[in-house]
Image (cartoon, rainbow, N blue to C red; front, side, top):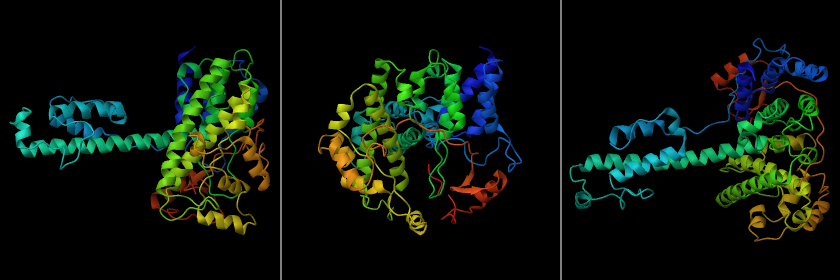
Length: 454
């Protein structure tokens, strides 16, 4: 492989955890195939050209005012630098260490030993050492002021570490809810086959698109470009295990071995457990009205919706793997329901004005046991019960994804990535930048339009 191809593959791999425009990823894919003459058929090349064609609405091809990454937590770089100044056992660390919880925790523990502070015991009244205790611990030369300064820093660092872990978990759930296990795919698996890498990178970019403020439905990830890249995969050389990380359909899973299916099944079940725990915590903090799913004052709808999307993705993939392994009986015995998104009150009103109403799934979700109770065995939710509730609310349990994984995916036409400011489509990146800097659309966006959600 040439150095040029290697660089392009690394760019594509990096995009799996980012929010690059599908058009820009398609351009990288074209460049990658161009580096190997004759590797791209005419149909796929024509489809890719449609995605990479310069938009007439934009003066700068390849430019966007939107961030090309998911929001990352602010690291502990500042606190680590301060710890290096105050503690003899702490050395200066590289910038990246502040984003690594393991390294931050190691510094807190090492620094704590220096002042005889136990990790996790940070109460300013009960956990500090008094003068006699400091003397007994060999800290008699450290003044009360200097000791308190170090104790406070470690206390703040422990709180900072907790926030980093929470925000990293939220980010992980956001990425999983959007594009499945793409961000967890090892580089070696991703690059084992060039065609596989191209399909995964493009579909992931499509899946990671921001949501629009609309009642007409969001863009579906699998478009005609993704379909063209998928159809050119060779049954014998494609890395189907890697493809299953982002596109676990029956057509893909039939090429995946039992051991690899079992590995994916375990990963998705682990994610289901983690998401269920987060959903339960949010539910206990602020229960939602399951009969309407309209956001109420004080509710953290962003975190709920991130977790709900992750649950939906994990549940669908788990179902697909069970069916591929011939274990449908397990779904019949344990069939946790879907989790619905919370809807803003103005969007709900917009639905009613447009002649719509509550989504039919709302009644099903409201009547079934809560998913985390089902996973823990506290409530029974067999397949027959889900089917019965679905029929009562006029929902097809199989086609609606309540009792089966999604069937074959149909490609949708390619659509250029809209330039969004809080979910509102703006004609060009330049005015979008100006509107963003001016704080316009910082409140409710005007109708009709599309609220930018993670």
